[in-house]
Image (cartoon, one colour):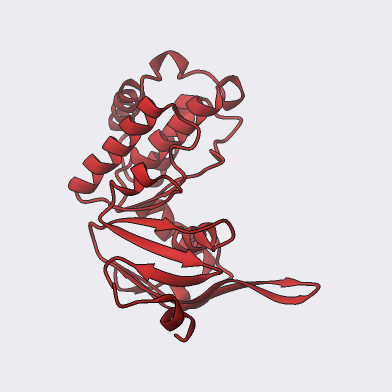
Length: 235
């Protein structure tokens, strides 16, 4: 589904070039449930932003279902993301001037779905996440946990081919967190490819493969036990 070839990302700083991703060579198969782990500053969010096509300042090759993303213009990348990728942000990223209902409906507006069907999908999603009573509220009127639930609902409503999640349960109670992870498992069993960044071993246990990052390098991959830190740095 996805292939990175020598993907790298750096920032300019007064001290010179600061690298956050180094020579990432990674293949992600359709239907996998992958966990990305590592200490703060390891490059986890940078890798997720590259996958989500939110950042286009990386170098290297990015292939998505056989399409050369690295050769696409910015608008083409945005269209690809809107139609194929759902994203759960650690900091919610809800639109402040839209209600809960409107935020959840937003991804459906990028697809050719009749209005009546969209209304039904939004209603079902509001019910599933127990947000019916809050459908007309704005994000500022919600708690952090409620905003996180809306963010998850928005990410999954259009059944994306690829679901990316950055600490998806960080602001939820343990019972809510378990419900979200069970939902992710269900989506994965239905064919959605999932990549999550988490510090939670409990969340990681839902995945089938774990990738370890350190200082921008990929230093571990449970699907490739022969990859060791020393070898990774020499890639």
